[in-house]
Image (cartoon, rainbow, N blue to C red; front, side, top):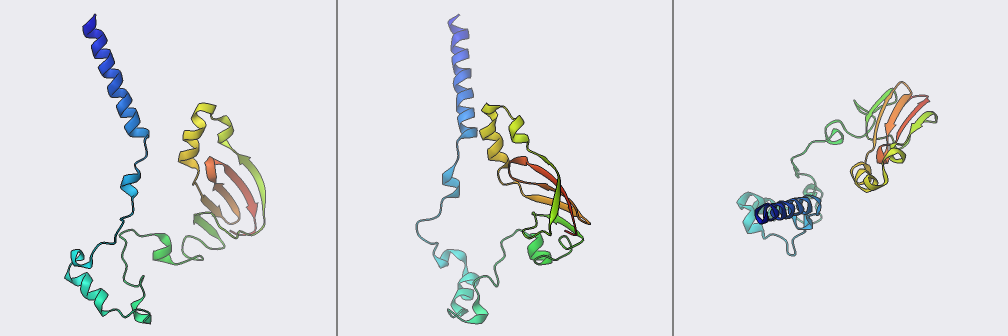
Length: 155
């Protein structure tokens, strides 16, 4: 019997460690360095680019040659109106200045979630902000998974 109880305790401890590791935030991974990285560690090309730049010169804008490795629709297609977001159709983040609309339906799933799951559900869905609009008929998925359908003139 001691063998079974020992294995049960070891299994419970391993499960507790795994759950704690999965649910504990890791602020160390997102930490800012205390001191900036020395330019010598970036290589000769980066050092030469920094030395050629005179502070305040219009040709040395700090964002001019920055490549961050990720593309977005704003960077590729420009600000609205563009190929995905114009007055006839809108796909993407919700329009900040939509024309007047009449709400047809609203659904808030947060009221259907059991109380013990609400914090987890809210954490995952608090930053939702997406809209699909075609010729004035729009469906918006907002914070916490709320869904709103509306009709108006244009998008």
